[in-house]
Length: 168
Image (cartoon, rainbow, N blue to C red):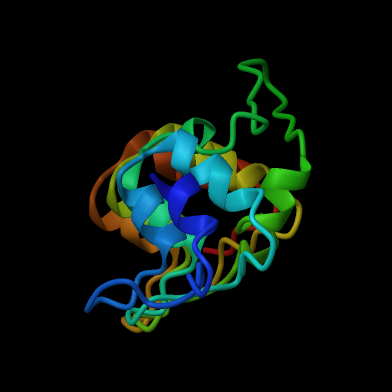
C-alpha cells in the first residue's frame, strides 16, 4: 500500500500521520511490515532522522516494536562466538544506526528500552555499535546497567559489564 501512496502527488512521506506524531516510517516499523519499510527506504526525500511526539527516533520505534533488530535490519548480524561483528549497510547507517545514542523526551536511548524489555539479543546488537554509549542516563538518572540491576536481569548485567565502556 505504501508503494501506491508514495507515488501520489503531494503525499509527504515525512508528515506526521497520527496523533502520536508518527511518520509513515514509524508506523511501518510498529507493524513490522518489512515490505512497506523497504519501500520507504527507497523513497526520495525519506527523512531517517524523524522523531515522533515522544522524541522517539526510528531506532527507538524499532526496538519498541521488535525484540530483534535483525528483523528490520537483516544486514545487522551477530556471530555467537566470543566476539560480535556488525555488518553496516546503507540501510542500517541511514535508518537510525547513526543516531545510536539519541535520547527521546524521557532521555531514554534505544539501549534503555531494550534493557527494559529484557531483549538480550537487541542489547547485544546495540552494544556492537562502536559509538554506543551505554553510560547515558535517562530522566531518572538511570543508565542501562542500573535498569538491568534493578530488574535483576543477570544476563544483561553480565553483557553490559563485559564492555570496557560501561561505568558502574
